[in-house]
Length: 238
Image 1: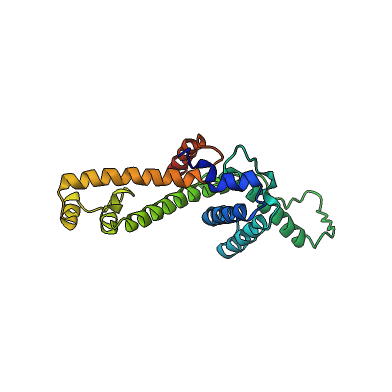
Image 2: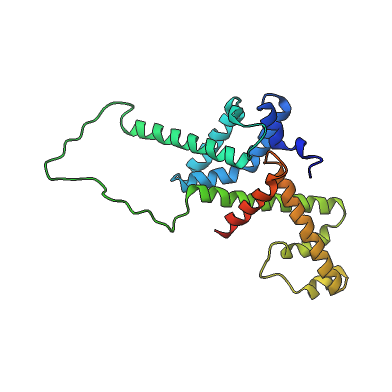
C-alpha cells in the first residue's frame, strides 16, 4: 500500500491545496464518494429530503469552486474529518441565514410578555434514541465505503472473467442471513464444497483489501488506514 500511497486522491488534494487540474479532479471524486454521508448529516440535522439534497449540492459546489480546501493540512488528516468540519460550518451558516429571514431580514422585533406569563419552551430533554448528525454521517460513510469497495471488487472480478463466481459467492461477503447453503453454490459453480470454502475465504480477503484501498484514498498517511477501518467498524455497530 505504501508504494502507491502518495498518488491517492486526498494526498493529491491536500498537497496542492486543490490548485491544479489533477487535484481538482481528485477532489471531485472524493466529493462524489461523500454525497450520501453529507445528505445523511443534513437530514438528521433537521432538513427534509429535498432540502438536504439541494444543500448538499450547494455545499459541494462551494467546495469545488476553489479556495475552500485551503485549510487542509498536506501532511496529516483525513478527508472525512476535514469534510465533516466544513459541513458543520456550512450547516450552521445556512441555519443562521434561515433564522435571519424568519426574523425579518435583520429587523429587530421586540416581544413584551405580560407579567407572570411565559411562552418559552422550557427545559428540553434530548431524545437519546434519535441518531446525532455526526453519527448519521459516519454510518452512511461506512456503508458507502463498503458499497464502493464491493463495486470495485465486482469490476475486477468481471475483468478477470470471474463474474459468475462473484455473483454466487457475494452473499458470504455481506453476511447475508439468506445466503444459500455452500453445497448449492458448489453445484452452481461445478466445484466441491471444500473448493467453495476456499473461494469464499479468498474473496473475503480481496474484499478487505478493496476496503483498505478505498479508505486509503481519503487519509493523509498509510498508518491512518487501520484507524479509519476501526472507525468504520465502530460506525456500523452503532
